[in-house]
Amino acid sequence: MRHPSGPLVGALGAALALVLAGCGGTSAATTDSASTPVASSSSSSSTPSGSTSPSATPSSPTSPSSAGSVPTLGKASFGSSLAAAQKKAGSYHFTLDTAVLGRSIMGTGVATTGASPAVRVDLKDASGSSSVIVVHDIYYLKNAALHSAKPWLKVDPKAGGPLSQLLGSLSNADPSKSLQAFDEAAAVMPRSTRRIDGIQTRKYVVRLDSKVLASTLGYPARLAKLLPKTLTYDVWVDQQSLVRKLVTSIKVDGHTSTTTIGFSDYGSKVSVTAPPASRTTSRSPF
Image (cartoon, rainbow, N blue to C red; front, side, top):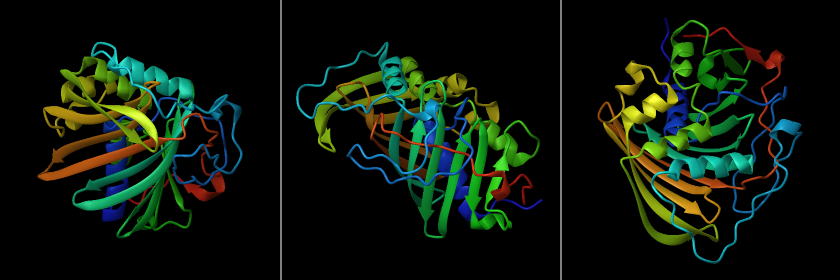
C-alpha cells in the first residue's frame, strides 16, 4: 500500500486543523452538483461568483457595527452563543494560516452553516496547491500527488480503507458543534477589545480539555490520544457573538502547529458544491 505523499498529508493535516479550530467537516451538506471556485476572503460583503442552491443561501448578509462596546459573554453559554450566531448567519468566508509537520500552509475557503453545512478550502504550500470539499458528508480531495486522470478523489468516510477511516474520524465535526464544545471549557477569560477588519471585537482566552472536545465530536480513542491534554484558543468575538479570528497551537509528534483562522463575510451568498462525476474517482492510490 502506498502512503500519502507530503502535499496530501499537508492537505489532510490542514483539514484536521480546521476541525480543531471550529470550522471542519460536516454532518450534513448542500445539494449542489457542480464545483464552484472559492473567492478569496475579504472584509467586504462581496459575493462569490457561481450558482448557489437555496439551502446554501442565507437571507441577508450579517453587518455588525464597526463602533460601540462589545458585551462580555459568560462562560456557561460561551460556546452555545458562538454556535447559534454562526448558524444564524448561514455562511462565512475564512482564511487559514497553519503549519503541519513543519510545512507552512495558507488557504482560503467558504462554509455554509445551519441545517445544511458544507465546506470548501483551497490550500497552497511550497510544493503546490490542493483543495478539500465536504458535501453530503463525502470528502473530495484534489492534489497532484494523487496521480490520477481525474482531478478529484472522492472519499466516503463510511467506506473501508485507511483514508476513509481517517476522514471518518472527522466527519461528525460540523462548525457549530465544534464551537459548542467551548461550553465545557475549563476557563473562558475575557480580555481587551480590538478592531479586526474595522469591526470591534473582544478577545477571549479559552482552555479546553481535549477529552471534552474528542467526546463532543465523537473522535475515536486513537485520534484523541494524539491531542495534548489541554487545548488553548485565542478567540476574537464581535458584537453579534460571531467569531472573527481564532488562534490555537497544538504539539503532535514533536512538532508545534499554530493555526490562525480569520472569519469574514458572514451571511454572504456562497456555493459549496461537489465536483461533477466525470471529474471524480473513488479509486484511492494509497
